[in-house]
Length: 135
Image (cartoon, rainbow, N blue to C red; front, top):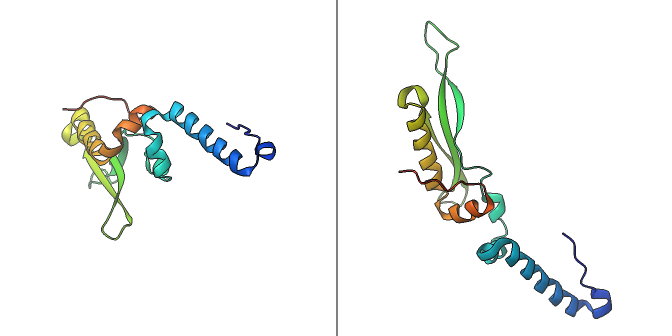
């Protein structure tokens, strides 16, 4: 979205004030109560996940009779800060054969929701999370 504020005609200082005012109006209109948070944290959008759904992966589980056997599992993967301020990947893997499809999905989904509990409201607002309560 591009909008002209006419800073050449009205001057740079007045143009900057007008541009900031216009930016804040449009931001509040688009993002509602999350606008201040987006302004204060410039990297928030890069840290948010695209999806909060576990994925099905096929992990190798060889046996003597079938060395190419693969086991279907649900995988939940997210990042956390460690003590030194670096990102560390965390994963939760649940076997579908061992737990059943619904139980494996529920366990991994709960792990993802717990990992992203601070951002659940904004993810729901953006449409990246369906608001379904898991018990």
